[in-house]
Length: 450
Image (cartoon, rainbow, N blue to C red; front, side, top):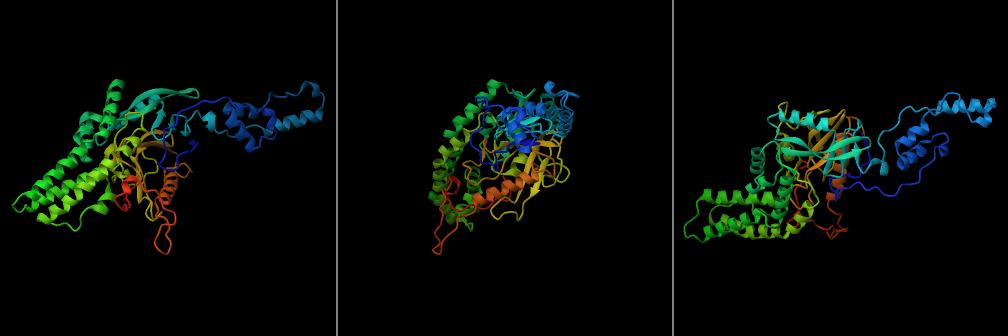
């Protein structure tokens, strides 16, 4: 796989389009005397692979300049140069303008990725992968074809992961502890383009008035009502209210908020109710104050994608279930469609991920396309359409392999997530701007990249 890698971590902004600016000056083949590697790269980036191929192609046998046709020494030098210029291997994928705006293209040219949220593939490849996913009952998703793009001489189609049916979407929403209304915002096999647009518009509207806000307010009222009752609240009732509060806190604010704010040790009776009565207004206020950031983050996605959690293992399990041969935590050098990549990152970086999982949805030779999520402490959402992204990985042992790419991303993420250095008084030397999800206190390091 050949890559023009812009995204070192999961923190890319608006998905890139494919602008075609003014044509750059072309480098004449005559300027490539000796065909130095830097000269060939310059020609490739400015004029494309066709120009490189023409420059490296051997001239016709015995072809010499007519005015020097009778000069034996010139003829010998020309023949020697022609032999030296014969190409051994030409990189097929071009960077810059010649890359047609894509970040990565598979070695065989059947898959192309642009930004976080756009993946394109050969039509037959999408169909074959969809049949393989359909044949696996544990897998909740399948693939459909979207808009077509031209990549060189090939026509590729946008890859659209969708749930196999509405029941699978509803089950995923329930398992994640999300509001049932969320199932109506998920892509399902057979949706028309108009239906997908309607679902995405409804999802965007829900961000301004999310059902979770009403759930938080309703739970707060029930807690206050229980406190005002004259009778001692039964222990199971208090435990149930606490469990519901924790579920909502996890779904809206994430594990870092819960670890920093949730009352511990757990108390029962009126004391336990009082703890919850103090907790709920702060939880509700923090959730509501973050809605503008949520709308901004989710607006980056211009297609109806599947809502995923801010957790890599949870995302993989939601998409493909758990493979029978050991589950998700199995290292596979070449996972097939419906399986997953896995890497153990224990000890790799103090503030990084403990491991990473990525569901494989397409393959092109030795290259694999995944749809995945990665834990991000700066995310404004714990479940969102902006959390899932496409990634294209090369064969094991290469610099574009899953292990190599994820280990590099883990180090970059750890560097951003590490606490700032402090002076002798304990003050931060380089104060960081605190993201929304950390305003409640220090976040606990997630166990996985999810």
